[in-house]
Amino acid sequence: MPVYEYIGKDANGRTVKGTLDVEGVRGLKTVLRRDKVFLTEYREAGAKGGKGQKVKAGQQQKSGSRDVEIGEMLTRISPQDISEFTRQLATLLKASVPLVDSLAAVVEQLENPKLKRVVAQVRTDVNEGAPFWRALSVHEDVFENTYYNMARAGESSGNLDVVLQRLADFTESQVKLRNKIIGALTYPVIMLCISFAIVTGMMVFVVPNITAMFADLGAELPLITKILIAFSKLFTNFWWAGGLAAVAAWRGFAKWKASEKGGETFDRWLLHAPIMGDLMRKIAIARFSRTLSTLLSSGVPLLTALEIVENVVANKVLAKVVAEARTAIREGDNIAGPLKRSGEFPPMVVHMVAIGERSGELEEMLRNVSESYENQVDTRVQALTSLLEPLMIVFMGLVVGFLVAAILLPMMKLTQAVQQG
Image (cartoon, rainbow, N blue to C red; front, side, top):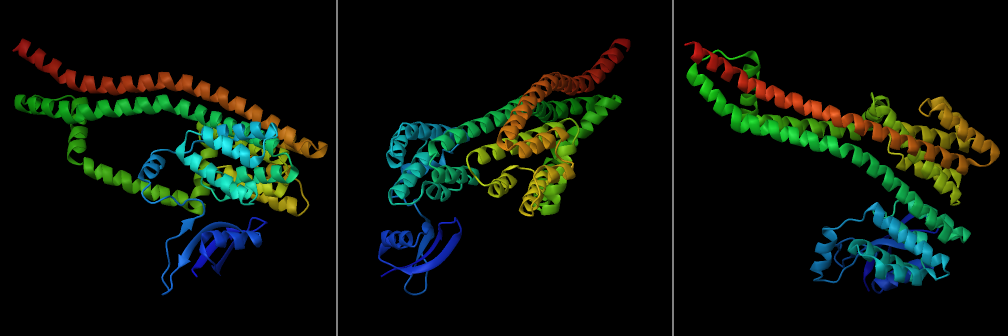
């Protein structure tokens, strides 16, 4: 009888590990389900002390299914895919369709092969007796902790369809916010790429030929042309050194940013950076307010909700403030106090949170804060986009003008010298 090493989650969501001597994977699941442990990962221990490959529960594929593997490698699960799945499932549950049947119906409608496989495994686990939220938590790379904790609250309260509807709205709001930022950055990035391509082409193909022509003529070159020639020689002869330096600098920066002190320093600078700092702060506060409001309105306990928000706020400075608020609440304080003392949250946000706590309408106040800041982000992004377009045009004009002037000025001098001679 084979021996399996397993990792699973108990009824409280804690990770448990162990070893069992059972007949096959189905027997392993049966024994663990009896002990109220949900299997997430296992591997078979060999008879001679060797160990088999780790397998995540629900991710086994039939041998030879290369089409499935290639299809999944070429696709990814986007937030929009998750939102559509969530809304479809909520609609079916609201129509009183049983959860297992609802999941089966949604699987048939999904087009993303990777999400289709994940939801099919969730359906199988639920059909075998696992709670819906725990079946979701196995796939943490697809359903983040915000998602399955809200599903857990909805399942416990019997309002899973309502919670899923809120989840769909929440996911769509996050997608819209992200798309606004991407849309604002797309134009400047494209313009920078075009500028870089123009400069590279001039440095590699045009300037060396002109340099050789000027050298043959032995004419005195203008300062701007000398600067261009120096840049061209540096670019063509030492481009590899520049590339290595850029890679080394990027890796060093990434390593520093990944450290606790470096990451906090960078995030603090980001919040106080000129022009973009205010926008980044508004985005972070909108995300904080929207996430916390959605979690609380779905029945997630406050301390658990703050722990989730701490992980999704995407800024270490603000995450530290949220952690301090969680500690203060555990000791009998409120949320508004730590937010105010940190100085990182605007007075208006602190004031509305304090009013919400006193009136018992914290979820509604947080929702109002998130809507207000999302509107401000939208306005600021539009303003920055309107400002960036003419600035990028002026920048490209200066670059092209410098190149043209550096090439034409010596030609004009040579022409004048020939005419005078």
